[in-house]
Length: 254
Image (cartoon, rainbow, N blue to C red):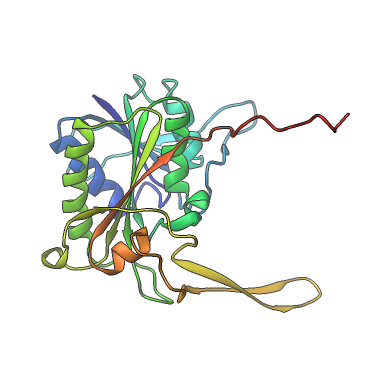
């Protein structure tokens, strides 16, 4: 199977190379296309088209990935997935793999993630997609440390994913940022009702307002992705592509 690999940390992200190596080892035919700079929090935004409707990119060499085509693209992760599915970087992929993200993508806050947004864009087109994140827990310092844990876990989940692709859905995986020897394994999890961090609105001035982010201290529902992570497991959550609910009753609308 052909795999398009992207992220929202940018083409130089450590986790991107780890995920690409894991995909190659699992037998995928890999193409890497990632933002030329960080695009965290971009959700599923389709941004990046230059004047005249062009999308700018540059070929890049990826360490330890000889023969793997790679591109630094001046676009959001979702835009990269969107045009990649249509052959912008070679033959269209069979699956999209996104990550490994530096930081957690958990709870209802996955809505805002560029990592998940790229995967969801692929799923909305009927493909199977995987999003992987290394879930840090250091308040005030979200830089991940245990990338070897992330790459090993990514290798396991990519091999599993190759045998169990779910068309039109996203497998969202969060790996705790702990030594590999302390990783207990994988657990299916629900989305927590909030993300790993919460925003606090501070002083409102004439032209700006103070906003700070800190690790959530709310009680975690049992079996949620955040609870699973804090117990030393990698969480695995299946996300559906956007869909409509029942028809809206409009009898009294006129």
